[in-house]
Length: 311
Image (cartoon, rainbow, N blue to C red):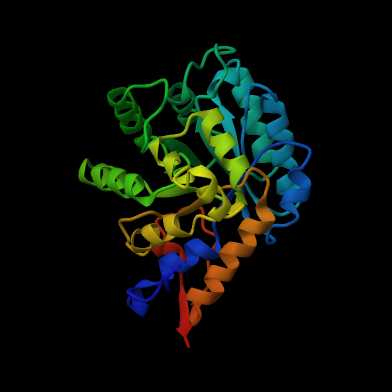
């Protein structure tokens, strides 16, 4: 990768350097979660997914364990797995007891709702009326579309959620152009929420391609398959690193109106991703003394970075 900071004035680099220094890592609540978490820096931001296969209880147990281990924990709450108001109150009570003050609200992949909440917006509205709700709520965004929802519905859904949420995280993308184009349109349309760019971690190329095809990601998945044929396969690195993607996002990460940070879809392969991000930070942000302030209210980037003197 070219020097990320080459074209960025020193006074504008802090937001991007913080994005490298303090990303959000997404973990899966599998048997490998504890091992993965222990490869992260103390106090790292960790989100925990929620699937119909494992149920919401697995997510809550993993989140409680991560909180006890000292991580800034963000469980996903899948609307279609929450039965009713009493169930929701029980969930928020457990989060509060564990000291977890943030949650990420999704609709979930269950074919049918387990109870009263058919989608993420319904659960978000219910949470907004709960006195014991987490202080911060995040919602997903789909710059490359959704396989089961048409574009107009997605936009109306995001507009409605934006009135109740504190930030958004995009789906995993492999190219910067669709992310940047989408954010530009959203800002022009009035979206003011902080938005984290969803990027893949450092993962074996074959595994990442398999996951991308299985969960139906957007057109930027083509970036994984450009080197076709025997020669292309031989030349293609065995491990994917989102270097070109991050290079394209770098100006936006330094722009107060751009992306608020990075959300790393790690698939529990956090060691290589952490090493890669830390190496980039050391290489490109030298002299940018970054002091992230753990604030639950300042999520725009600008409010959580203190340039503590530059060398």
